[in-house]
Image (cartoon, rainbow, N blue to C red; front, side, top):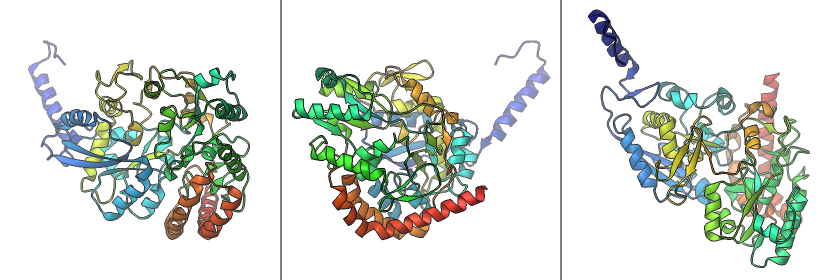
Length: 517
């Protein structure tokens, strides 16, 4: 700022002295970073540190370009280099658990309630972040509303940074519009319409599987039964805190009770029976359990319907599909009810980034997160190199320039609701639905909001149960195995451990609800 000529020399000197003192006091000599922004030059340059970060997915071809740009920006501030380890989604649960158990130095790691975050916290693998965020992570704190922080603590502590934009996940079926129109079928309005379309595809389009869904253990939210449960407005069946995306234990009716599928079978068993009929009738992709990436067969034109955890598709999704099926066309079908109060939320987020106890660079890891939660840096890590991979459209949208060089995967390491942009070329059909998901006041509050399950008392049971579940559950919820026969075997092997997990979960819920009164 230019000083006016009429300022006296003494005032100039006083102002200069004040600025120098302010800078000195605002700089943390230990962290080498300004706590307000996290990117101010340090008075003493920090030694370079390489952060090892483990996240799910496939490494984009241009990842090295993005890392090089990020490291260039960080060199004179927090002086961090990045070693990103990508783990295939299908291997995520085992790989991350083995890595943590081995004591390998990891500085930031992806985890989730549907994966094993509760178990990892109970076993002491993650560092509490309250003090670290207060000292080094102001941006991280400010970019997430207090409601999100309050609902995503563990025993009153921040054990991982929530990565999310909304209070409920969108869900849909992506449908081959070109096939629907070719077969003379009107727009799909109900689940029955969807299944009728699938039968017609089976009849008229040999070589195309009518239905594709998630068949691997870590993705059961998007199985045939899992996605159907997300649209249950009669009983509001929901996943539990103990088993993530498995419905062998489930909540319903917002009554604070834990239901056991081996004892209380409806409506879940009926959904399994329906899925079994679809499979027997040849409507389900035959190798559904072997497909690590369940979207890929659909993108290759081998399926007519696929489950998806959002509304709409987006330009990147559409272009990848078109590159394989040039004459194809897509549309979204969802049975989401946007009416106020129709949906229940506990405001819990699905994805988290944690700092393992074994990390030798905990402070610098949080400094990096703080840096990543600045708008310009968030854009880089989320969308790639501006002008090469994408370009901004105003302050809140982006346009994709290169769909193959860098994929958008911010949801596994930087997502926040303030900086996230929307695809300017994306499907705006369900923009109103997305707005509902981001509005906390549109939901009925879950009676268990703020509750966290401490799994330490049933760790052995969880390990035993998860081993057995992997044998049966993915097949049951996708119709591959007959539920009448399989449920008996499943219960014989997993019933006792599941019952103990249910009882422990119910005991903790009862204590939580009693304490709230």
